[in-house]
Amino acid sequence: MGVWARLFGAAAVMLAACGAHAQDAAWDAVVAKAKGEGKLLIYNGTNFPVVRKIAQAMQQDTGIPVEVLDGRASEIRERIRIEQATNKTVASLAYSGRTTLYTQTQEGVFQKPGPLPNFKSITPEFATEDTVVYGSVGAYALLYNTSLVKPDDVPKSYKDLLNPRWQGKILSDDLRAAGAGNVWFEATLDAFGREFHDKLAAQKIVFTRDFPEAERRVARGEYTLYIPFNVSEYHSLQGLPIKAVQFSEGMAYVALGGAILRDAPAPNAARVYLNYLLSPKAQAMLAKEGFKPAVPGYEKEAPPEVVPLLSGRLFGTTTPGRQAETLKLASEIYK
Image 1: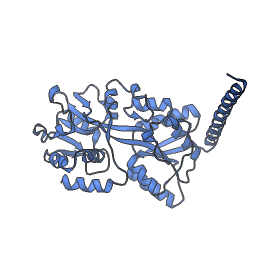
Image 2: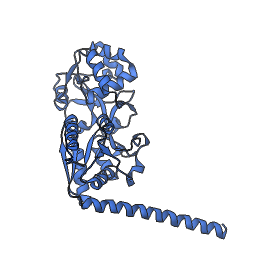
Image 3: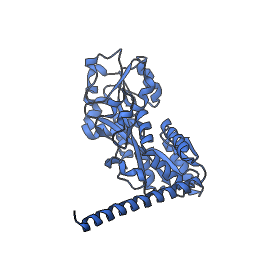
Image 4: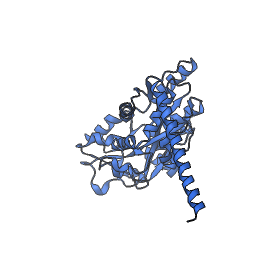
């Protein structure tokens, strides 16, 4: 290698090091500002405990105080609307599912988070929006009673649910209401068309909005199957006569994440939380709680019984802006 080549190579290394140092310094400044903003309040529309656990871990690691307020996504959305309309924004970050976050984005509720050091590691399909940072995926599966279903009879495909043997034996989150049921409805509607749901409605499935109790109703044998089962609940049901499986086509899912509120009182602390959400520690925490992490490679941190449920391909989810249409159609089919 010639003298000039060595000089240019050394210069390139020095420039890269200077760039990395400048980025580190810029982020250190964000963290320093965050520590001076007081408490970070997060509105958690998912009610998942892992949001609070990550907040507690961030507080321990950074010294930034964090509080999480849980509630229904619709109620939190209305709270935010009122606060912003009266110029009394209290929380700095909203954590929810993709449909709610998209709707709020269209309403101008959020501000852009700015550069986040850990964002570079995220799976590309979850790095498509400029205001929302997705940290994980909530995966849905089929739950069945192992005392009532022989191994060879376990539904392998979504279409196996149409087998006459399951008539009157399927419990489901309400497909006509916002939430897991409607996510599952839209994913299967897009894949199989209305005909699939017309036939599924003929199976006389029973709707519920109380998924923790629904899982135990299946365990007690009141119903044989439950859809869509939230995989993050699986670890709490060990020891019961139930088992969860993914359909051969893949998993219906919902992307989960956060966004910084417009006029947030602690915007830098909110940025720190979003960055921390994508950190190795938080991504491992999400996997251990049964969520598919947004950063590849952390699925292996999930409990052994959960790993197969997170390893399948993503089958389908909601399309932003389409919820009113799918809720109306589901109500027409399932009367």
